[in-house]
Amino acid sequence: MSRPAIYRLVIILGFVALLEVLCLTGTIDVITMQPPHRMIMDLFAMLSSGSLNAAIAKTLSNAAIAFVLALVVGVMTAVVLYRFRLARDVLDPLFATYYAIPVFAFYPLLIIVLGLGDAPQILLGFMLAVVAVIVNTLNGLDRVPRVLLKTARVNHMGPVETAAKIMLPSAAPYVLTGAKLAVAYSLIGIIGAEFIMSRGGMGYEISFAYNNFDNATMYPLIILILFVSISVNTILAYWEKRLMRRRGQG
Amino acid sequence: MTSAAHVTLRAAEKSFQRPGSKEIVHAMGPIDLDLRKGEFFAVVGPSGCGKSTMLELIAGLTTASKGGVEFEGNAIGNRIPDGVGVVFQEDASFPWMTVRNNIEFGLRRTKLSREEREGRVSRALNMMGLSAFAESYPAQLSGGMRQRVCIARTLVTQPRLILLDEPFGALDQQTRLLMGDELLRLWRHTGATVFLITHALDEAAMLADRIGVMSARPGRLLDIVETGWPKDRDSRIVEDNRFGEITARLWRSLRTESMKSMGKAGAA
Image 1 (cartoon, rainbow over the protein chains, first blue to last red):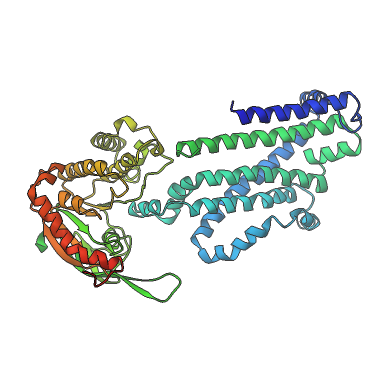
Image 2 (image 1 turned 120 degrees about the vertical axis):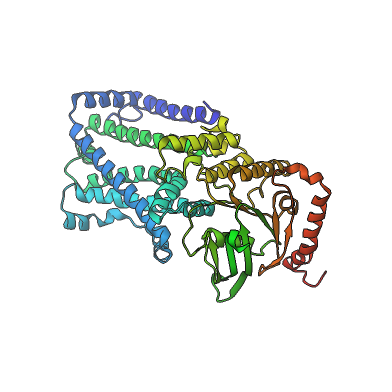
């Protein structure tokens, strides 16, 4: 392990150890937070009892749907915008300011239009994630060397085949950066939506547990979300690193 | 000569509008030229004279503003003709594919059998000295080897006309001489017509049967030099006295033109 990685681990473990000490000595009282080892035990108890399996499945599958939709629609939109300069010039400034808009503020409207089911929650996750995919994919497409596009033409490739076989593979590391962001954004969108407009899911269960002082449910759920998000991100980051190394970068 | 012409340019001209303004730039021509079937033709000229434009016209990557270009008797419009392979100056290898897959790329889109494709790829790997690197990625290779991958990728499609746009421009001098030898070997082996653009006069003098000398922009053909080299030649002809004469003749034609392109018109 590299030195920065060791220091990073030491900082994280030190922070957890500090929390453990503060909780055990009663500096942080038990109603506010349980000691970390307790959270882990509660997490295992929760998972083995299966009491919240339905909520976990709902959140993760909705986040997965939002993520896949954002990736597919985002990449396709980027390819189309790359071809149509005018549309891109019109939309570029809007993308740049997109994340200044708090999409959660529109939740009443989403409920009115789409009801209280899964649809408005998935839409929120999708809306948060899709623009990151578009922006990063476009960035990658802009960097496709012109000589590769000429090579495609010399090989009699049409626009669709060129996009699929030359442009997107060439832009893959950038698409992957967009995908990494999309994982985080779709989880944020889904869980945030569950806090405010849902009758199920991990977000809903966290806020329900919070309202009932049920720390044995709330903290394990928070840890589980952290764990899922970090794992998916780590896998994508590893893949990205492998791609970059293959190309002699990094 | 016309009966054996493989590629014909007839008063071919190219103009384009400078992006963001109404100014029309006359980039090249008019040029009249017949490439004989199976010959090695090189073009030299000052930078910016429209050498690459000429290659793109023949490749079908751009269309002539006036005049016409024919390949094997058919007019080249905006359609890329079959049987033409192009090697560019820039590294055009696909960084996400192994060397083997890079070379096979053009063949995957044909109806050839799997055995035939694999056979051609392994022959090309051998010929270009890349067999040991078949499963490597381009990033693991040197610039010269990456360019060999691109040449191999073009060769496996067995083009009847090979267009090379300063393919060795980014390589060091020794590598260029050796790559020149390989190019001569491939040319003899395939019997294809070769059209090479280069800024290096010695490279043109060493490789080509005939050398076209282009003027400053808008590029026209000022002179066509016949080298008279035997077909069976290699880089050792640089020792031949005639090599120096040819290079000197090329430079005599080009000196004034190169000054023009550097903005020193009149300083002869």
